Length: 491
Image (cartoon, rainbow, N blue to C red; front, side, top):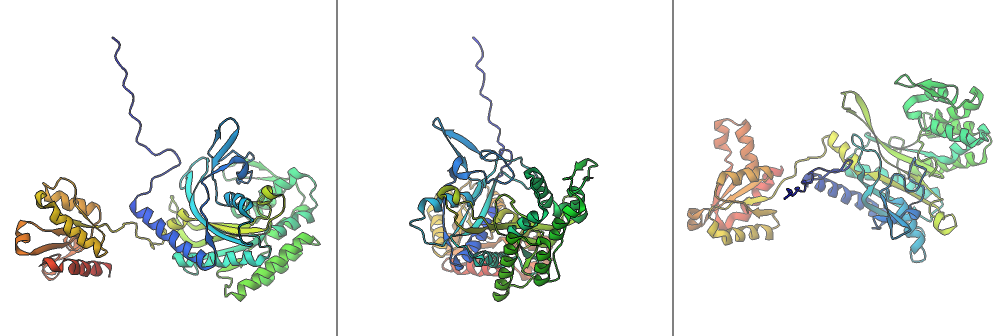
């Protein structure tokens, strides 16, 4: 008889490009989302939870940097024809929701949404296929006052979650200005125009000299490989370079430089005028150039945005994996996208919004030491006698009713040392001890685990005597003493 082949055990490993989040990380994210939601709600935005799955047709071709609608997304076929996919952002679902329910929604419609999104892209260091986004959008408002409000709200949000002024900058530009520059250049070949756009998008990496080379004959990259250029003459490339280098000492000078760069373009002038209006609104709201600044080097989603574009950059320095100093970089971006809802309605619907990368923002706060990754665990009620479990349940009920996070040890109580090891692994602040003798005397032992660990690590014998970490109190004083110790630990 042939030997039955055993089914191999599945590997216990996270799928590539995904990760698991444990207690402290989940708590930190929940607290941050609550703070961000508070700012959005304060500005008058309403919450929306849309489906995590959309039809591929609804998602459309707006996924950045891909050509096919189902490239870069996790998609599957329903029945014989319909394809659906996990959402890759929170904006495409908003366009579908607004088109579907527009007769029931107020105009403008102001909504915020928070949740995971999925991208079927090659993962890398710090780049995952599932991550959290936190969006706010206004649909149905054509005025750039809506864009300016989003930028102001973004500034307030960063400060609320713990990024102080001086550590961030919201930078603002306008896609119409770029369109005006391209119009001034007189490019009739679409392929050449697209090549120019791709070159502009590399400005932050290669700088002015690199852009000049790429617009011309080409350049050698860092690896020594030669990259072919667009083939423009110096005169043809001049408007692009003027546009990218038009940042002045203040908004007025920047706007003046941009007017020179666009020449006689009407659409370009419209974009500069919109930036001028936004600058006036920022000033009226008390947002100076150290918080929100007009910056022509901001180029986002060239095929997506139709007007103002903006991003929030964290300006403090960190060390990369090779020990080199660098700025943390962008944690949020957005802009005006007046064509997105039109795909459903056939009519242009003005819209603008912003998306915050929650995971990057959390990473930034950790880099600055503004998050404590070690979450405090519950008070642990130890079990000295397994036959008295009802007594221990009464103790934990009293603590919980008083609003104190707590639990009874539910493992094997035979070894008391293992109970304290468990409490230590949970980062518990306090252990409660009630043996038979304590029960008979009407007392209870309360052990300050945080102070005990500090004393054991640092203190001399005299300090140990002066600062006991274990207390014997009447049973009736249990809650009061636990609260006293927790208060002392928090200070």
